[in-house]
Image (cartoon, rainbow, N blue to C red):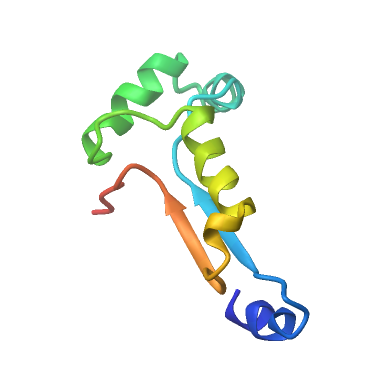
Length: 91
């Protein structure tokens, strides 16, 4: 990401990325079925102890970050990857 930021800076373009964690979307129904892992609620319950904020993200949580990064408010942010995972604790 930093290389993109360096290359695009001369054009006045910032380069950033976001990395969402577990997010409450229908995708998890497919993943759960494919893995035989149970319902979306069961999967999220299994993840809950690892997420500092105690819940999966909502699509709106992720959209807020994307909206910020696409706005003028982030004009001095470049070369960054914003991890939007509610504080997942990897053991």
